Length: 177
Image 1 (cartoon, one colour):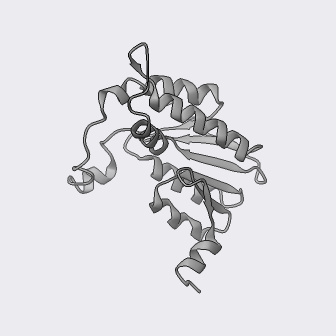
Image 2 (spheres, helix red, strand yellow):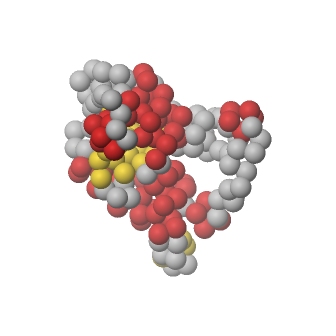
């Protein structure tokens, strides 16, 4: 698969919703692993499309970015070869669904960000750092991304629990002054 990323230009007052596509796809795949159509696995495709319909409604008026992992070969792995070494290879019945998931991203009008050597969370963090005047919604269930809530313009939406987390929530929960 090619890197289809293009520079996204936004007016400063435009909200942006950045979707951790890989995280959503994996969670939907494992939740609907046995869903098939004529023998072909479709659980991840179906789950991702349903999630996207929810996001389009919930974040109406926002520009959507699909943040994607590029591969297992990242700069972190070069620095530390054991990084995520315990993870299994992508199951074949999920791997064959990725082409259709990418088509769905295009059909939903998502701006696709995928860069060799980087994970989706690296892309999300880069957007947060660069777009400090835009309202940013992070859509994921990766708790590590909550650290980006130090920026006042960022909200985090956990797609698994369907709950928003913002800076005030973190400050109260962890008694940060």
